[in-house]
Structure formats: structure tokens, C-alpha cells
Length: 460
Image 1 (cartoon, rainbow, N blue to C red):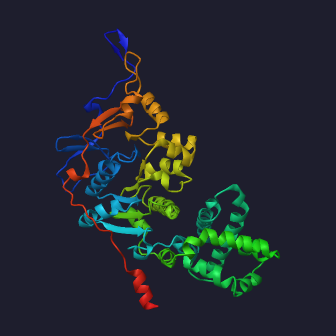
Image 2: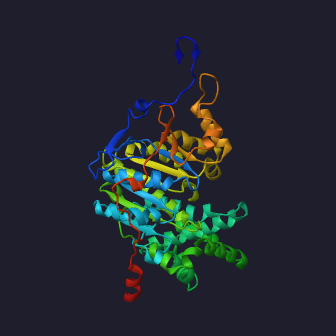
Image 3: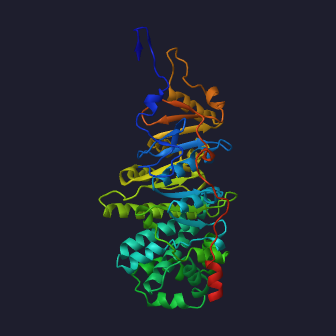
């Protein structure tokens, strides 16, 4: 902007008034009654300002930058004061332990899928549950479309190299054929049932008898024929070995296969009543992380269906709070999901350690599109020079042609400082954002446990 006609100012930091112009504020001492919630972006005494809009959020901070205490938990606090639903990916179990009791006291329907200790998971989820529901309702085509996507993730997309592609494809076709056969003969499809058909009925002749009775033109026959009609035992063994390797985590853990073979809650409740679903996954290994991706994808699709039945928008806004977003297998449709979500009252909060993680997971083009689709870019700290240069360029230059926020300045932000790019506003350097301990919240310490496994064993 021109000042006194003397020089041109290319950029500047926002004023407090500009930054808070479209933010909502509430008293930190408040215990409920907010119209809407969102990430807390500024503190002014006992007032905190949060973004209650439909904008998605990208939060970047390396280990030790207090992402959880400064953003994740305060975000959940704000959302719960407004009665908004949430799906929370919780790699350490910390968010569940700390905030579950708070949500329960505020009248939430809370659900915990604990893949860290499946035997004591409070809830169970059959990833094939929606397939069963649609198939029994006569919507066979819709059921098989979802089944195809599931088998794609469980088998074909979990290849560790291109060399595995043929075997994964073959194992995936066998799995698809077995799943279709289970549905066709009137049984309930689940992970436990799929394992039964693989390890018992492929050997005792049950599958072979069903196969011989099928019409060669049927889709089930076509899926199974690539394995059943083989005469080369070595090839058959290789397909079985690949199948067993990919399904091995379920075969090796009875508690996991049982946990993934029943539904103890309806995912659609996220959009109709204030509900919180926690997805607890191990942070020390990524073996089970693809299950969280499956749940996110399936719940998102179910919420879109629900929105179509309710004039295009959900009765209650649903927030996906995705801690360590880049440590879960990629959501192949993430760009489309971000684009379609806003108009349906679905919002994503993506928390990552560095931008390079996003590039490694999704590729440069998709990573940049994800970045562009997040209306709030919240930078805490990282040592990734390439990204720091991008942030510096994004902030612009002062009237003297120097960076408004240099790479060195970004590298040396204190733990009390946060640089925020809010929608179309100029950048704003926020100081002393409140931690969760500054709110009137009594945090919990215990992980909830379920006893369904023990009950099943007693029944058996």
C-alpha cells in the first residue's frame, strides 16, 4: 500500500482488529453454550478467539512444539462446548485418556476403538458391516462397490513393492470372491468369517462345492476362478501365502479379528447427535494404522449419505481431528474430501510434524493442494528449511524488500509464539495461546476398557 506517496509496502502483519474480525470469542471460564466451536487462535485476557467457520485447518509443529496441549485439546474443548461431533485419531491414547471423561460429563455419546489393545477395546467395528446392511436391503450393487473398495485397501494397496502387484491382485480377487460367496449363501460377512472360509472351507471342500455349483458367467465364479482353476500347486501356494501375509494381523490375533467382526454403535450417529469417536492406534508401529484410514473413509461416506437425506447438510457438524495425519495410510480422495466436506458441515483438522511428511505421503502436487484447501495454516515450529522458505515467502516482504518473517525468525520462534495465516487475512504472530490447563477442565488419566472379549469366552 502507498503511504504518503513515498514507498510501496508489499506486505505487513495483520492488526488485532483485522485478525479477529470474523472470529468468535468466548470466556475461558465458560462451561457450555457456545454456538459453534473451532481452533483457538488468540487470547485476550479471559477471552479466547476461535474460528467457528467451515474452514479446514493444517497445524504444523515438530515434536515438543505442544501441538496437543495448545491446539488439539483446546480444539476439542471448544467443540464440546458447542456440542459438535468429532472423530479423533489418537496415536498415543493421550487424547482419549485426558478428554473422554470431559466429554462424558458434557453429555456426549463417546465411543473408543482401541487397536492398541483390541481385547479391551470398549467398542467393536465390523468394516464389512455396511456391506451386509446394503446387501440385505437389496442394494447389491452398492454393497459390492463398497466391498471392492475394502478389498482394494486390505489387499491390493498394501503391496510393499511393484514386484508384489500380481500376487496382491490375485490374493485380492480370491478375497473378493470369498466375500461375495459368504454374502451369496446368506451368511454375515466379517473378518472372522473371511478367516473361517480361508483356513477351513478352502481346505474341507465347502468352497469347492459352492464354486462348482456357480454359473461360469457369475461375478463370484470369475473372482474365484483365478485361484480355483489353477493346476499349478506352486502358484496356488504363492497366492495363499500372499493372502495369509496380508490378512495375517487378523489371523494372528483372535481379539483383533473378533473386535473387527461386530458393530456396537452406528457411525451415522456422528451427524445426528453429539458424538465423539476415538481411534486409538499404536504410535510405536504402523501395523494397524490402515484400519483408522478405513474407518475415516467409511464414516465420511456415510455422513455424505446422511447429508443428502437432510437437505445437503448434517444436522450436527462433524470434525475430523487427525493427529499425526501423515502416519496413517493416505486417504486417496483427500482433496475431493476436503472440497466436498465444507458444504456438508464436515471439517478437517490435520495435524502434522512437517510439510515434507505430507509430500512423502501424498506427493508434491496433492500436498500443495491440501495446503491450499486449508483456510488456516498454523505454524508452531519445524526445521525444514524448504518449507520455512515457503512460509517466509507466503508472509511477503516489507517496504524495504526484506522478508516480513525471515527463515531465521521462523526457526527460532519461542514456544509461546505461533504464526497463523487465517483465510485471506495478513499473517499474525500470536503470543501466549492458552494451554488446556488454563481452561476449567478436569482432565482424566485412565484409558477406558471393555469386557466383551471376556463375555464371549464365557459364553463359548
